[in-house]
Amino acid sequence: MRAGAHADSLRAKRQGRQRPAQPLAAGLLASWLLAWQAAAMAADTAPLADLPDLAPIRAQVYSAEYDKAAQALRQLIEQAGDNAHPDVYNLLGFSLRKLQRYDEAAHAYQRALYFDATHRAALEYQGELFIATGDIDAAQKNHRYLKILCGAGDCPERQQLATALREAGQAPQEGD
Picture 1: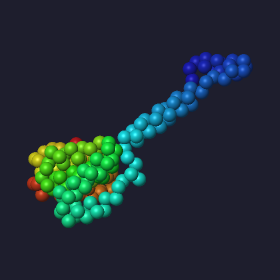
Picture 2 (picture 1 turned 90 degrees about the vertical axis):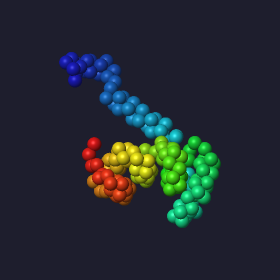
Picture 3 (picture 1 turned 120 degrees about the vertical axis):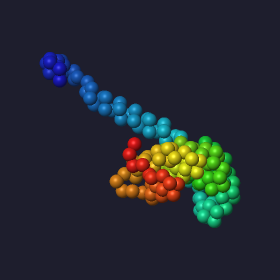
Picture 4 (picture 1 turned 30 degrees about the horizontal axis):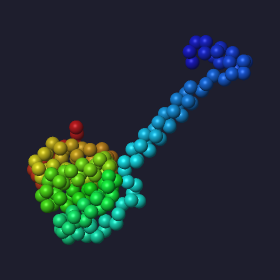
């Protein structure tokens, strides 16, 4: 409290006035702004409940029917408009990468990560795309980002990208 602030506060109380609770007001304002920002960001992302049933498409992917899967995924994206779920884009990117349609796969992974920047599978598969196109530095960057996302407990996506890097003759980089 600044010098004289206590005296000002006592004077205000005697006159029936209270000093405004500035820290409380600032805290409430900050809370409101954070809630507003979260709501604004959430408006761009389809809720998890909007995830369509991907089981039939996953079966196509697991059966290496990548072209059929890509067609079905594109239809889902067309139906969803600008709010397609990141898992849909991730599967599309995976299918297109397996078809060696790398530019289209890159776009699909970018869309998945636009809707969810922490989508670990999209980061891992995008890293494999980077390896396939010779962009090892970008693959290493995804590997480091996965390390941050996975924390102390490792995750399968980071391990798979590390394996892909080793198979490409590159040691996964652990630091920045």
